[in-house]
Amino acid sequence: MLLASACALLTAAEIARVQGEAPAESKASASESADLLVERCFYSLPTFARSISLEVTRGKGARAFWARSFHEEHEDRELPPPEKVRGVGEEAFWTGDPRLGGLYLLKKGAIVRLSIGGNQTKADKLRKLKQLARPILKRL
Image 1: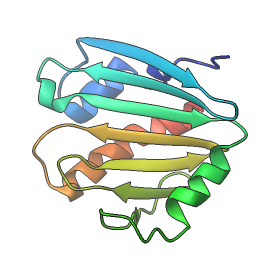
Image 2: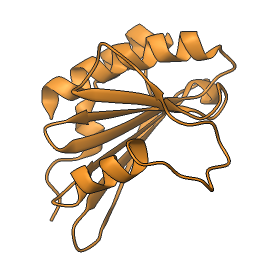
Image 3: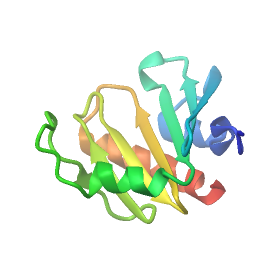
């Protein structure tokens, strides 16, 4: 059962303020398992490299998924461990490299994953992702 579309969590004006242009379109999708509901939204911007991907995971298994992902050691992990990010959400982590990385946030038992395209430094992407995350977290 879908709760609310992930695409309703950001407005065109909020995206334009951060990315410099409003989305040309947004595409929603969702999937559900026994204990998790995952809603996604891809905001396609006129400059495709600036597009935004948003994913919201909720359900009774969300906190357990968060604990496994960010608080347990993974010996087989090929990527660097998640990097703690301060100042947004109950808890937040950056994962990946500057090109393909994303910001994961925890708020009220919901997990938000947010990423933006473009050839920017990790610091620049994190600054923008935090700006985008704030209105999302208020709407959860």
